[in-house]
Image (cartoon, rainbow over all chains, first blue to last red; front, top):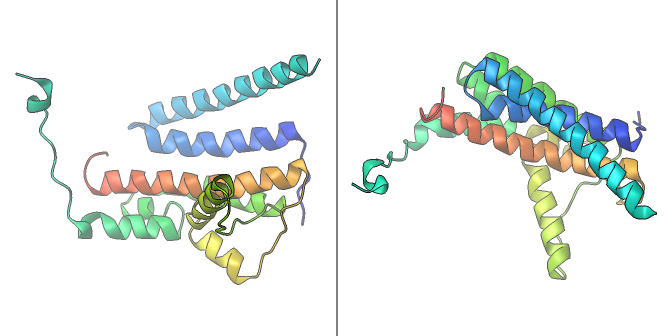
Length: 60
Length: 139
């Protein structure tokens, strides 16, 4: 079985898995963990769009 | 009184207190948390790390082998190998079942390689967390 994802899908999947782990290991209460996980995921997505646009505009 | 003197340095916890949790955490992602009676967090770690590793395999990611050569080659391959190795049983089973993928160009393979290494590095974070819980520095 082979997985064929676009750049965007793969990056989103990466962000999802990483955010879950970062949320679990970095905070001390469940509420904070959930918030931090969501915050990290949002940061990934914002960086994804930001860098995407930067590369698009930089490419000319 | 200086701040450094106020802060009392905690003594290192005994090996027997944290080593089983860290070792099990390496072997099975989230295993250390299960051993320390944190099943919810253990399950989340298990699902996220295993999911990432399996996705990496399904994208036909490349497994690093330590190589010597110029500095960059040594750094990338040795660092990548250590990252893969941190995957614990996932890495051991993959090697035992003879998974072999050449490093080919293409964004899917490239993402797969990063997924495999990152899964190992996230497991390393989970092991550090298990250590802190076992040594009483964190709940």
